Image (cartoon, rainbow, N blue to C red; front, side, top):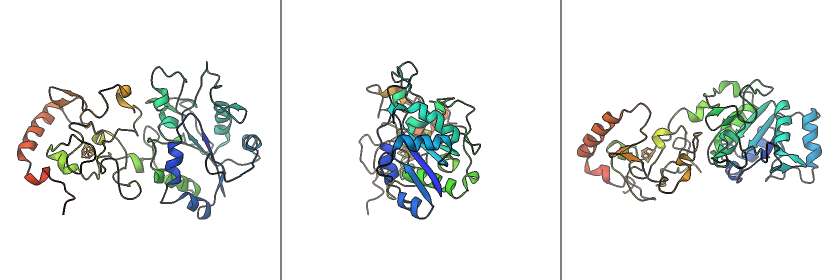
Length: 320
Ligand code: SF4
């Protein structure tokens, strides 16, 4: 039996919604096939009538062993570091987090808010928000740089806005089956298995990217979204086009630019009007290029690519 406790800080519940949609494995599979006991979750109601405060204190005291602490949402410290803006079970949530993280074998941060602070931590950050072990790209966060759970691992970060459901359940299964040591974390504590390639890997529009065939409208089935609509697929580490959403699609497949939501800087440009969905350029060259690409090389390449593009590069590749 693996005891799991899921707490919810400053958040929209998007990661909970995502989690409930998991397919490989499903949430039910976690319970029936992998022996997971969900002690408490804000939406699942597995233990109706439970005295939540007693349950949490029993976890803190060790009476109930806490194998996995999952946290969704940002850690709210306001006002003035007290955490009183986010009370839960008669205490500031940050106090529960502080106590529970000391007794948990594994701590898992799910979604951008829990990993990096997310949108609530954007300047001027009135809620004094932090991620569990990072504030944006800066290591530290609420638990501090040196935090290690009882297993010896730092907070396992599964970012995304929301995180892909199967990223969450597969990491929980890896823990429950004792295989988490097979999974390497990157410098941002993300499991490499999901975050070692770019969102662009597996995108159906790669041919349009290569020939600089652009689209300027959402929802189109042809054209790359990088040149005009600021797609961050070549700049963002995620497996959204390798492990499809609902097994069938992804943002870019549906004609929506990648927003880079698995990276600590999300939302880029602080959501200033005119910056989202509009590629920022200097003399026709995007301000941000895929890592390792030089501006001069890019400029030369795109001129040649556009001239060399065959007619089918401008076509809808799904038309039969
Ligand atoms: S739509 Fe985005 S992810 Fe797909 S090829 Fe273009 S830039 Fe890359």
